[in-house]
Amino acid sequence: MEYIPDQQTPILIVDDDKGFLLTIKEILISSGLPEPALVSDPRRVMPLLENHPFQFVLLDLVMPHISGMALLKEIKQAHFNTECVIVTASDDIKAAVSAMKVGAYDYLTKPVQYEKLIILIRRALDPLREWCLVDPVG
Image 1 (tube, rainbow, N blue to C red):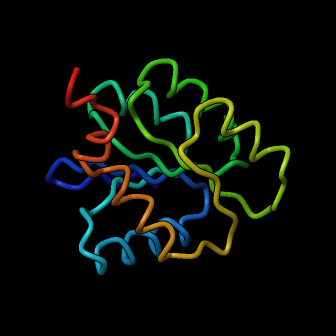
Image 2 (image 1 turned 180 degrees about the vertical axis):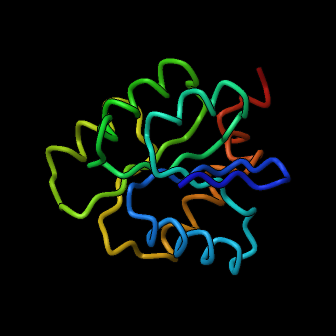
């Protein structure tokens, strides 16, 4: 499954579970967030990122062909400013720490707490989120 909205979106959801993709899409839309792009085949992610500057990518950890962790590494190497959140059914502290070391913005377990996901996405998309890192004096 691959769905790219007509209007450019800053959000890409990658999961081999099509039901999860459609559920997340509806939740984001009903929360007032932009309609996300959806991809069930992780091999499509890097070509899509070359043509579309996604700001936020939600990645399933366990997928066929390419793991979420391997894809996270590729995304962060090629598109450092793209925020990535790993989502998985297993609550594995070791995997969470590894993902954060590679550059994940956060790590969520399924079933996803939708309120937390929405807050994460809004924070990642906020153009003013880095204002506090700027030294106003110097």
